[in-house]
Image (cartoon, rainbow, N blue to C red; front, side, top):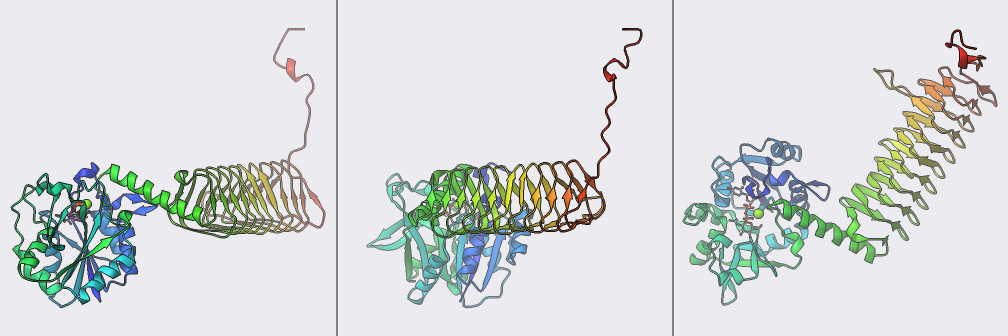
Amino acid sequence: MFTTIILGAGKSTRMKANKSKLLFNIAGKPVINHIVESVKGARSRNITCVINSQSKDLKKILIGSKIEVVVQKQLDGTAGAVKSVLATKKPGNSTILILCGDTPFIKDSSIKKIVNKLKSSEACIGTVELDIPKGYGRIIRTKNNISRIIEEKETTLEQRQIKEVNTGVIAIKENLLRKYVGLINNHNSKKEYYLTDIIKILIENNHKVATFKFTDELEIAGVNSKVDLVRLEQRYLRAKAESLLESGTLIRDPSRTDIRGNLHVSGNVEIDINCVFEDEVKIGENSTMGHNCYFNRCKIGKNVHIKPNTIIFGATIGDNCIVGPYARIRPGTVLKNDSHVGNFVEVKNSVIGSRTKINHLSYIGDAVLGTDINIGAGTITCNYDGDKKHKTIIESNSFIGSGTKLVAPVKVSKGSYIAAGSTVTRDTPGGGSLTIARSKQVSIPKWKNRSIKGKK
Ligand code: UD1
Ligand code: MG
């Protein structure tokens, strides 16, 4: 059992922005959400995040995720942040895990391994070897054992060559943390209380400090600036796309595919360039995704063809459907098997029955469509009266002529024909009948000369 402190009160100066770096989105969600998910996944008993007094938006997110929040009044360094939390809690004898809130991709499995190291030691530091260790605290070892951490600003030229760095992850017995954190001083170039100085104090007092070496740099990379944010996101997304490609999904260009959430694919799926996947997306076998498509919280069936420039958000697409190009499928929509939604068609909160086709320039909102319906180009469900949304029902085997307006609430009964250009305001009888609801066409002769008086 362990409890966690996430450090997130820093000024984020290097971010050059007016909000905390933990609020910036990376791979589809804020940096802080990634780390909170990992800590929860590792089964931390309690999670507290330290923030500064300006971080109102950060506080909102944390409270939403049921994380305790403590404000660090004086931003005097990472040791100061830890002291602010300890001051709010009754002393206990648990293990405390401390993480920097700016390392989004740490895995829960690594957290567990670090905490487990405390079965045979009193503290454990996560470290990693980096080819370019710039910006990180360096691990100083004496006869193989860690003896201290030196922040980059305090290193000598020689120490700066050390490639093993501090990841910012530490697990420590609570009694030792409480005993020694107060002994850390701020005699350094930043005049800050560096939590990392606790290692030297522990070693000097004969406590056993272990290390855990991360092998995947991505896990511990910190987001300190916009350059870090963008480069880290690119590496992460690239790695995700590559791994999907290696496992058999034909991703045309992993450097132009953004899997920001969780993408679950079955066999023989093809994904063309510039597709973005957010939140949870499932794709069934033999389906193809054209270029420039956006997917968010959706389920796509087998043998589906999503044509280029399509947006699918919060919808379910059945088997053998064809969607797009340039279609927008909005939340609450279900396309049943074998249906087609084509060019410049928007569908919202509607059910589209099997084999029904809406192929061009239409808006279908708050509607239920049966099977085997043909919706002509430019058909619009007028679902909003300025106050409330109303439902349109189109029963199976109906044919809706081009340019029809269906003023909801309205029902088109089974087997109806609607003449092109109709404005339908009442239910139709169906059963093979044709409904025409448009003004009669008249032609006025000599219209051209109407205003030319006196002229022959
Ligand atoms: C820190 C470590 C460094 C490590 C690196 C890994 C220290 C002193 N240094 O450096 O050894 O290699 O992380 O990413 O710990 N924070 C507070 N209160 C403060 C100052 C900072 O809560 O007064 C928070 C920040 O919001 C941040 C975390 O602590 O989430 C680390 O601070 P940051 O400024 O990013 O430290 P680094 O220079 O990255
Ligand atoms: Mg940092």
